[in-house]
Image (cartoon, rainbow, N blue to C red):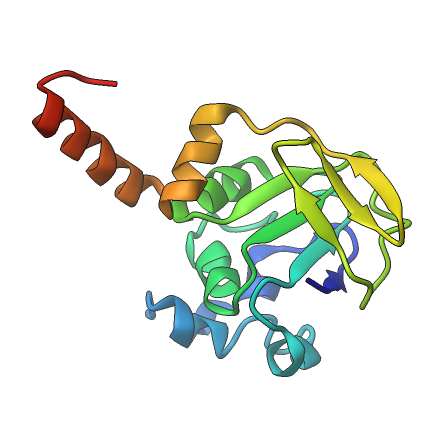
Length: 165
């Protein structure tokens, strides 16, 4: 997994420009992810790569298109010093894992990164960086592929067992 580095205050319009908001297919959204902001991203990103950013990632308009575009591009994790609150929730609800890392400055563009949310860290260049713990119910939503899939799983459990989890 390779790091794609971004700075502070990356807004949802930079992640996916507003003119593409009529689309909901993650793969089609991925064709325009960071268009006009960082055009090399689309050509170079590979499944499993990780976006690393500074403060306030995902600020701006509330839209689930932004995490969907990242997912469509193969990004499953964003590590940032902080997230806009609505982006954080939209990320979890669509199955993208947002990890809060107090200091991302030493995580460098193009370097390999290992992500261990259960262990509470990311690792690059042999150095571990603590990340805030992800509550188990949020990790379960991400693991299911988002809130809709999680709800389907819970409904199946309820139907099969006659009880709620």
